[in-house]
Length: 149
Length: 118
Image (cartoon, rainbow over all chains, first blue to last red):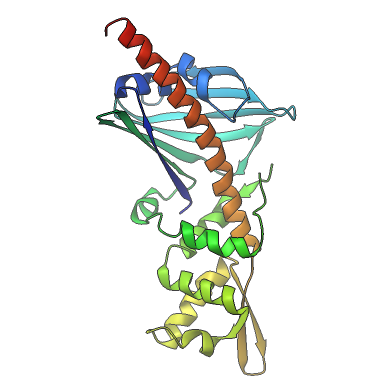
């Protein structure tokens, strides 16, 4: 399993966070690395519909993140397949990964949980816990900084 | 950017998904290289079970075994770990930065909705 989880608390109600996540206007405003404007965002928000977000980094490379909506439960959950191409070449060979966004209403707004899993075997991703990241960090520290992408 | 060969990464991450294997790696990190029997000593499992864990770690490229006479020496090999960390950091950076902006955007939309009394 190869996956990462990020949890964020956002001071906005789930319906608004859901819109921000899934509309073209919303995606254009937040997608991608800092200070990199989104050129195009398209989203056909229904199961089986596709999305595509295009942006260009300072090094001149054009990035396209694209995929298909696999599950949509408004305003609770969006699951999508994900492929990243840079200047037309897949960023991860032979790989389509999966991004899950879970929204939960809390007193202050929304708790958003993002899971990005780069694997075909979803069952094994669910059966594992993200418990070893500390150990991995510690092991890697010895060998200096990881290669950065 | 680096191309990440995902099937390979899957092996690394699934090898790291087991506490005994992580303990083995942690020990190899401290002691550089160890014989298989010295490595197996602190574990409450039998040598063949340790050998199986070593096979998994070796297939993922996380350790390197070398034979010297009748002794097999085990060493940690750092590159696959760096590769796995590279994948994580890349997406961690991507999503952290994206979600920061998402929060800002959604919060401004929330403020707007409240101003309009919705």
